[in-house]
Image (cartoon, rainbow, N blue to C red; front, side):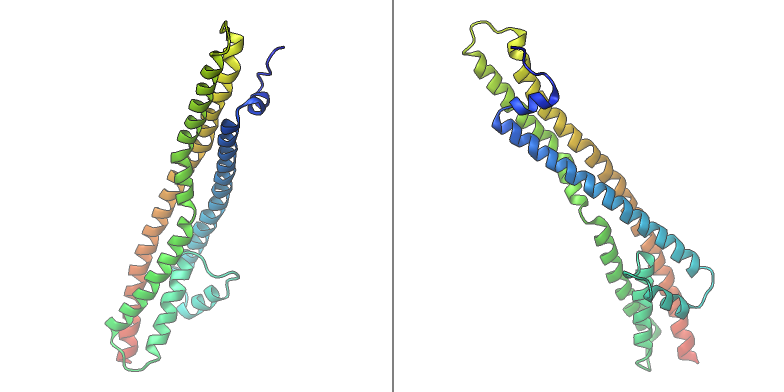
Length: 228
């Protein structure tokens, strides 16, 4: 009887360890694609929100109005708006204490903004380590399934008097599918990890620049209020 050489047929005819390896790779691939699409939406939404906020911020509008607008954001402000909100909230809190030193005000505001920035970056980096793990380990998991399948194929040949291509091909093919599935799971994960990690770093640089520029603005405001 002719062996079923379709991919589905080879998967069903594979040995149990190879099937377990393939199942793990399928789960890893599904998890990877879920993270990829979720992270893509999050980074795009954060970048768009930061672009919109930065345009409003440098348009010369009133900081109190901008703060109230950021505070009213449904689901919380994103990206640069969240950093601004934390810094300006701390600025108002410290200035209400009365006699304050401008440098101390800026130090407290910068600390609050750094905490907000770390929180934003952590949110953006969440699950990137999972993508890196899938990308780095999936080929080896697939290779393990291939080695196991080929080993079983050669062990099976010991019981066959004449080893023809029809006998050898199915077990070798089902073993090699594991390697292909490992690469299928790994390649998108590695590409997505490198791409998204670069985007997160670029956003972090923008956050750093905004924090320093806004700190200078708050220092001037604190000095002006103290002089008044």
